[in-house]
Length: 161
Image (cartoon, rainbow, N blue to C red; front, side, top):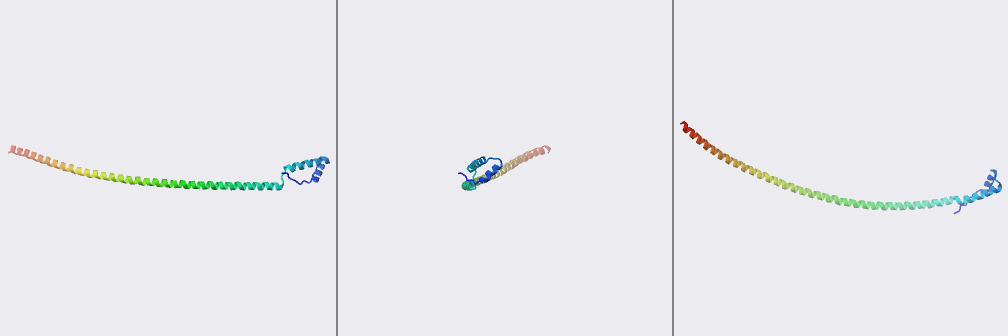
């Protein structure tokens, strides 16, 4: 798109003539400059059109980014909820397993207590039997000792009489 830049040609030519250019040189220079400026310089309207286009593109990119961010946010939220649900299930399973182990340990402890009590009762019974055996043997030994002592005393009394 070619820009039409308004240049005060007469003023420009006079300025060049004051600087020492001949009239035909000044006019040729002004004409060439006008063409260059017209082909390379954008007008205010062109700049505004570019700005409108860039703003539109920028808004489109913002909208696309916002949509992508919302999509990623939604996906992450869903994934987090899924992980949270899985963790809740895992935690419940671990709690259940802990409860089962507790129950098994309580049962094992109870069985161990029963065995200890059985051993204690059996030990007391065996100890009582052992005591009774010792008492009987001691009684028998004492009885034999008394008989022997009596026999010795009788012999001694008979010897000294």
